[in-house]
Image 1 (cartoon, rainbow, N blue to C red):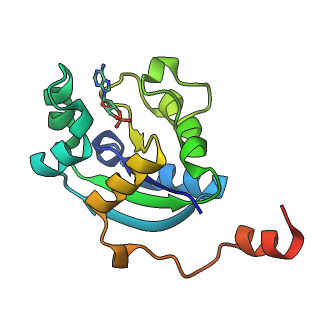
Image 2: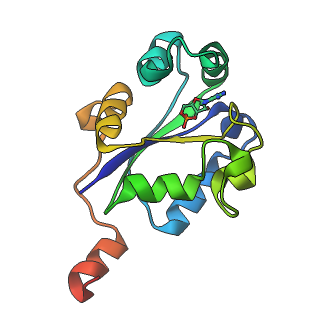
Length: 153
Ligand code: CMP
């Protein structure tokens, strides 16, 4: 079963929207198997955003992501990486699809509210940066999983 790493960024935390976005994830039916608040420091930022180190926007990205805590989560499900990226919308909120999180909650790329892994390799790497294996709760089933077992997809 596929896993992805997501984060509610400092703009969401500072605006008091943690519950609202988390509720949307739950309403959609995503299975949250790990969650924590963490105040990212420069070291963690450079690990998470290793591919962007040296790019012109990197200093601003670090300043933003270390400015207030984030909510880090691991979601698990069929095709969850692609599904969540669509749910969140394009990186630049101006290009994000109507109804997506970034379209509804963000205006500019730097303050784009949420992060989601872009591939299975990124997901594995990013999950390992933020979570120890024992912090991931995998031994339980959602109602949807039980229904799928009983009725089928
Ligand atoms: P995220 O999905 O977290 O992945 C990398 C982040 O870098 C991205 O969201 C943006 O917040 C930021 N980013 C990417 N491109 C730019 C850019 N051109 N200008 C500013 N920030 C960017």
